[in-house]
Image (cartoon, rainbow over all chains, first blue to last red; front, side):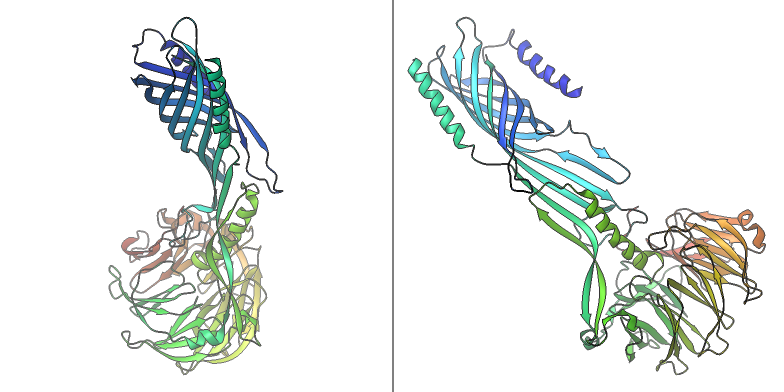
Length: 207
Length: 417
């Protein structure tokens, strides 16, 4: 439910802001598919990963060929939903009102706020976000009328994530061992670090 | 222009594609607590000289022993703290005797007996500023040998282990059970019944003899010459032996399955009088002339017994009879001072009762100090000494129905609840 609300908000924001903005305002909103190779499983095989990806960039044009701003999005990595929030840059090559080459770079973090923290009698587990960076390259195909252009882009996206599971001590708690990496109250913990490398193919518009 | 766009697209595809030969990376770090077996050669242990250290902070208090104005606190597997308890409101940490594998102690005429894995050490503590080891009785707790021919003992070290893998953690249960194994041994050894973790020995002195119980047997030492204990014999008791309480030339031995009563009127050769059996549970014992008070508790090493206080009529020592059982929360050690019984309820606190009427003990609860997590109690001449996972606290109990806190020595590393 929260998730649907977020996606709708992002899209609504992109459309509504297209009206009555100053010329300096720049928006690029795209969605598409991210492709990746999952980490090798126990038998050494990789599985292909194909997930949904959405990004909306809001910025200002600081010169004819450069815009800076912030991006917000939604990325799915297998069963994990991530909200990437980043600062970014977009650069343009080519004549205005003609097809242009676009370069982009986003750097920030991905939040796992939509992943529920699980707590049972025996354990608790949660996802934590991590650093995200994404260079991209694409084309801008201006429409014949108006300021809105169609865009197509490809991006590399590097997203770090973490998953923590802690099992509570059962019965009477033993004394924590000094200098141990085990936080008090847990009998065992596991911490998984994920590093996702994705190729994202997106389509959208900018104005 | 069209050509320009197409070549741009090709360029985009090539550049983007070059990012894309890599695969996702996963690293999982597992951290869990376990008892790690450690093999030690007794010859090495014996070769290391015991050097008395200055007083240091309590980390993990084990058994406590009161000798005159001195309070001796065992640090399981590490050694013994000696504190000057002349003023129970302000005990002074004097020094620490590092003794590997030590879990139990007793003092006889300024001679401190302490186990050192399979050996029994004797220290002269008559001058507390100059403690000296005076004797080593070898190979008396030889059940600890994993190979007595080679003199190798097996002990367990409570450890936190970290390992990494490039797989996602899937089988959670494996690590959970691994860790809980560690707890079971650790907690029983380190915090609950104080002294069960390693050699399982428990010491008591009576009639010029030192009696030490381990898991299965009672070891008898002649200590009429305090500096020269003589190992006389081992008496097999059965399994799950836990505590020993001397009273009027009798030994009351608590085990997982019952209370053994031994006649020690001939101290060198205690003779079994009777066994009072109950369900499997952990059970320390205290005794007065007519009754034995036994606490039964469930817990890691105690199976799933009931949590209760049992009152056993011992007027006829050959035929002990259960008088009444009272439900408790998780009773550990207990202490009797006149008509007042103090029960350490583990994490739940400390309770006191008037037990003049054994049929109505539940009607005569005096206090329940819930914040005083406790596992064992000594009713000393100057103070009631209560040991718990957070440290050692002393109370003025001249008014038994209102304990007055005097002091607390906190541990460096308290247990998380």
